[in-house]
Length: 416
Ligand SMILES: *[C@@H]1O[C@H](CO)[C@@H](O)[C@H](O)[C@H]1NC(C)=O
Ligand SMILES: *[C@@H]1O[C@H](CO)[C@@H](O)[C@H](O)[C@H]1NC(C)=O
Ligand SMILES: *[C@@H]1O[C@H](CO)[C@@H](O)[C@H](O)[C@H]1NC(C)=O
Ligand SMILES: *[C@@H]1O[C@H](CO)[C@@H](O)[C@H](O)[C@H]1NC(C)=O
Picture 1 (cartoon, protein in one colour):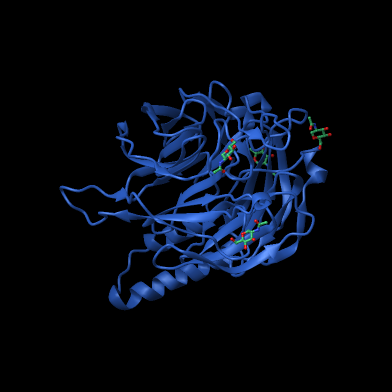
Picture 2: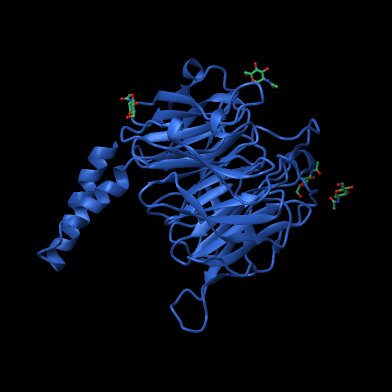
């Protein structure tokens, strides 16, 4: 089902559901559901993860194309750092952080991790010009090492960071228009890692909130070579009823589960309208997980991708209602079902447009388009490829090296 037929169904549904209760339903309800489903993004954001860490913004034209010549770079005031590729002992890159969501958006705010200074920076997005960013307050110091992933709840105004160094775990803090507040104690993960971490196995992959923002999840990669299974950790939100005395917060302890048939859980996106999650697993491809009321996950279905190297990142397209997954070692996107993780069609080969990208990492979707980062490997430029999700064709490939991005670049957020 493509974007436009979905919108007309949404519009019909909202007309039908309000018709009996409120005969003179305001028409703007219909407009809003159509813009949410189909609006193109205004800009994408990527962290440089260089010594002087910066957030690079690239504006999106009305037709969905990127305009890097009008991009910007804003210093986070923190320090980037790369993990160590365990197999070679070299600084990691592409995939310098072994993570999805090194940068996250909530409302008009962006949050970016600074792995080298153990801080997280909050920035405000200018409503008139999405490439104009302003740091809010000072970067917040975290009670652990090597932050590599961040999630923010717009509903509860809470930001949570995953850390994967010698002191690994998750910490959270409230935020307001004046900046990030007091950071809470680390919810530790026993990874026995170093700082910087040796990866990608046995590291934190991603923190993210459930669709209803009532649960904070973290995916943690196992290491099949030492019989160490990865897991999904779930921490409930507490004190969410409005009260003058107690602010909402993320519980100090949670539950973990290791859904059958998964080992190296990586990037995730909650599936809208359900409590299911779409998750990549670097050891085989992608899977759909169901989550019960206690926060434990079970495998609904999985898709094993032939010829994959490491399928690690995912974005769900609102236009197709399917997942697009990226592999750091193969220059293509694979489309997968949100019902059971099955592979849809043939892989979208990008070698013809990409001029030798070794593979793709972080990606995001808005409107009909998917934006996927290839940080390059030091030989090839960092670049972004734009794919039309409906036609399954690449429409643009642009270098973002001129904006200061190189093989350490990580994370992608999109402002719609
Ligand atoms: C999209 O818009 C940009 C900026 O206006 C323009 O440069 C580009 O040629 C357009 N692309 C297509 C495929 O129409
Ligand atoms: C922790 O890692 C060190 C090496 O970094 C290793 O010697 C030690 O056996 C590990 N401990 C556990 C419990 O895995
Ligand atoms: C791996 O763990 C499983 C379950 O604990 C155990 O049955 C199996 O023997 C272990 N394999 C190795 C190679 O240690
Ligand atoms: C980077 O990737 C290109 C294209 O796949 C390859 O030709 C080149 O040798 C790679 N460079 C390094 C440093 O791995």
